[in-house]
Image (tube, rainbow, N blue to C red; front, top):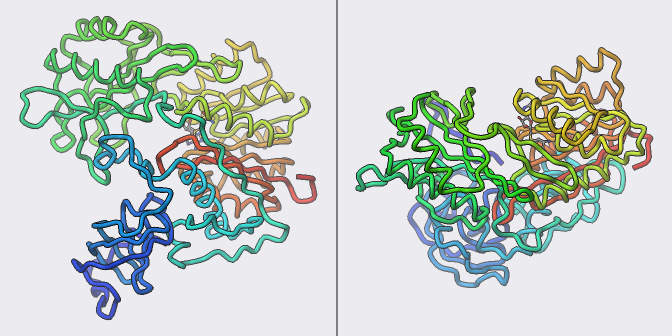
Length: 506
Ligand SMILES: C[S@@+](CC[C@H](N)C(=O)[O-])C[C@H]1O[C@@H](n2cnc3c(N)ncnc32)[C@H](O)[C@@H]1O
């Protein structure tokens, strides 16, 4: 269900009379599911009300804030019957901060919900049949719980096996990267604040500690805020486009202890730059790299195109398994290193390599999955759109003495068709696209190349489901999907899917 539909200018307002709820009135709602943004999906006299903070299985009292023809939004006023899965969120700023959405749900229930979200998307968007897909009790996601657009499930075979989500034994302090917008403290001359944007807004909530962030990243952000304030560095103002410091990015190598600090600035000149660098080095002894990224655009995009080293190395290193990775300022590197290893091992397992295969790793970033696969394949080809990431990937191959890999910069949808023209015939294609999923031209090329297996690593179950449908229609069968909890306490779900070409064994 598209909850963002806007009325066309000039179109008549929807007739909301006769609906079972009215704006500003209070109702008792039964919560029957959890929506994609972690909100409770309530039912009031058959009408759907999305209520932030309510959990499946609960009975709540809510005030209606907004009504549309098919659904509305309510504010949680009282929990009349609480879910056994409800817990007290440990973070003191959980309610203001938009970073986590599920801290009030027990971790075990979060894992169950994430699996259900994957199943719901496969069924509803992909029209795929999932083996034994009875909903986890009370864990249906938004549209499904509301009974809108339910899936047909028209795949032939027994259905896709969706495994229980692989969670963390300690799901806190797992992030290796903090990306913090900087603003001006209200009423305090010159003081800088930095934290998260409040949910659904661009209002910065100042934050000293984030419970899903590694402690070192908290310390780096706090130090940079303090030092920049002392040196009189002005924060960037989104509305006026004035001011200098936009974001502070802290990256921490969990297995090496190396730290990178990136200052994203609205211009090249940093006043008292040498003092700034000296004070950061003094405050953070394990820092290995201090970089500046220049972004003069009035945009939500964090990074600009120009990055330069202010001090130290242009990369930091980290390890996953026994492979060492160089990571530069703008390169994508999975944020949860513990679960990354779990994810990559599953991708490797699904690739089913014997040492003889030609493999393509599309959207390869700094070559993390490529290098994992190369240890078990004849040759791996990686493609990635960010040039610095490919430089990192090449360096990573050299550092790890892995020679059977070839990396190329460019859009996967452009480079892979070119590889096809050159006669490269992969046995396995691994894709790990951004949230928007695979480009249609890439899916077409995969179908034309006819690899035996496709391994699809996804951070967005809805685009995963959409793309699996295309691959299924083109002669592939989705065998299994493994959700991996890379982002505990948030609504984000990572999964890895195995597809085999029709007529081959899964
Ligand atoms: C989810 S990340 C995966 C990276 C890598 N596989 C990993 O696990 O670290 C997606 C990557 O796709 C890259 N990307 C985005 N659009 C692309 C495109 N059209 N072609 C190739 N790479 C692209 C991004 O820069 C990013 O590095």
